Length: 113
Image (cartoon, rainbow, N blue to C red; front, side):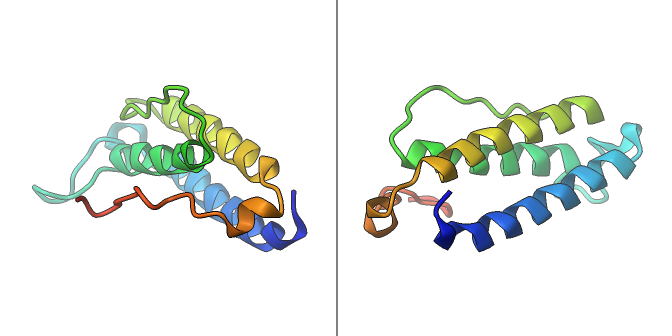
């Protein structure tokens, strides 16, 4: 991994560890619980996070399909986060010096069109 990316990656690892810890401590029967009608469940947050992590790889041109289904159990949530994390790690490790100045997300629209 490029030295310039190590602080970013370290922060990413800390965030993933915190999310994995939250999933481990969350009551299994509350994974899909909504505290209010339009609230986001922990399972939906996990699926959203995993999908975002997979986007790093897609920005580098990898078009392999990736699916981030909403997990139904804490074990599925953990597996999904770990798989997405591995894919993100591979993306970070594959970056070259030239990649750091290349626009990759010009079509990325996180808030919609």
